Amino acid sequence: MRRELDSLVTQMHSSGIPYEDAVREFKKQYLREVLVAHRGNQCKAAEELGMHRNTLSRTMAELGLELAEVRAGLKRPPRSERPVYSVIRQSLRHG
Image (cartoon, rainbow, N blue to C red; front, side, top):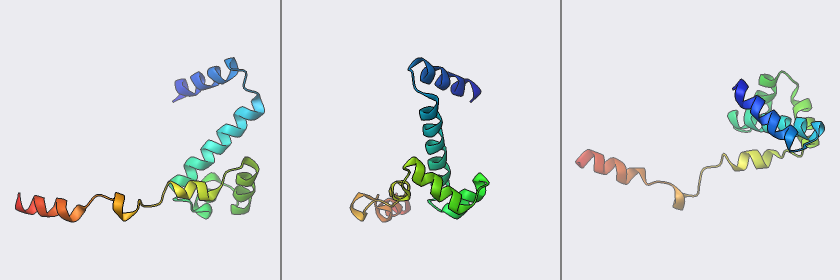
C-alpha cells in the first residue's frame, strides 16, 4: 500500500496538481469509502473517523460530497435487473 501511495503522490506532483486539491480529493475519497462501508450511516462513519457527526456533515458539505450520491450506489437494483434466485434454486434442487 505504501508503494501505491508513493506512486500516486509522484503522479499528482508531476501532473502539477496543487497541494490543496490533492488533500481535498484524498479527504473526499476517504470519507466516501468510510460512508460506503457503513452504508451511508453518518453516525457510524463519524465514530470510525473519530469525529462528531456534525463535523462529518460539515466536512462533506465543504468537499461537495453528497450523501445521496453515496447512497445511490448502495441501492438494490430494480426487480427487473435482479437475478432470479428462485429459478436458480429450482434448477439446483432438480439438477
